[in-house]
Length: 402
Image 1 (cartoon, rainbow, N blue to C red):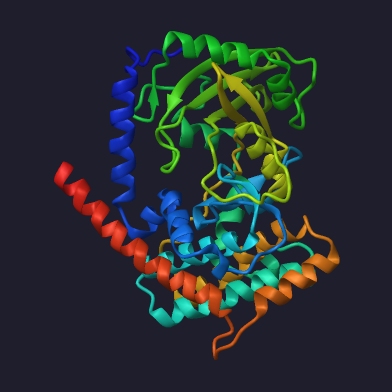
Image 2 (image 1 turned 45 degrees about the vertical axis):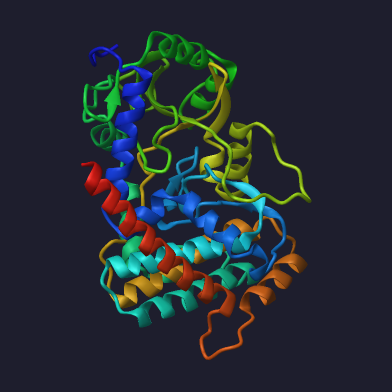
């Protein structure tokens, strides 16, 4: 194991994570929206969810912002744009994903200093892209079909990536150790032992040997592990970076497995009471991922680490976050249509034809000169205003504390 100094106490960890999260959320209004799912659902409760249409109860992302969409590799090596973070997934109202995505698109547009008319067009195109997916007119979205530079560039980059790129990006080294940096902290003794036990479990063995080019009989060995400072909304939860050796040739690309252990907690997104779902938080996340994002869901497993439910997934070099911070008006509009189609496909694969048609008619209802349905436009406008005010207040408190 690599040396990273003495492990921090629980209090020290909590204080540093809280400071890091506050700093990240103060970077921009868009960063604040990405990092504050609770604010979104507080608004939803305060403004009566009955104002939104009630869609069929299906697995939804629950935190459908731009940063949670991007290239995701399957176990077989295929790369598609899918939902890439399912912490908040529940069986719920698909309208919540649409409103959350609309808010994210609107704040991204403001962050790119685009005019308000662009935001209006983005919401219109978002509805078109989503309804195209529900209608089945686009069987599988590809960059060629949309010719979208922002999406196309990141997908092209993802297709060229290999283990060395992941290693240099995540751990700054291609050797099978995790270095001492401000992103990786030393483990406590109990954590080290608990991770060792999970790595030797049948669930993790099945996960790490399922990748193409590996065998179910391969030897599994824990090489290194560290507490991982990653994300924003998840800061404060347990999270570990774990390197595992698979087989005898650990110099080969398939011989190193980079696992992400992430604590699963109660979802903020409201769930449907008409359909049951797993009570275990980690099993809920895995089930939602398999329904919404098969490439990712089939590379995940649920486990328990020292009485804490965790989701374990193998990171792949092709898994990238879609960054859309600097866009032209036309690019922003095209991104909105493309990504809403991705969400539409994730929703549509859970519905039969009659349900898809019925939900599409509900989503498309308009009663104004805009093509965007009034319920969606009104929700996005109110959310942008409330989040902008909350963001400024957050920055004020952060500046005073600093």
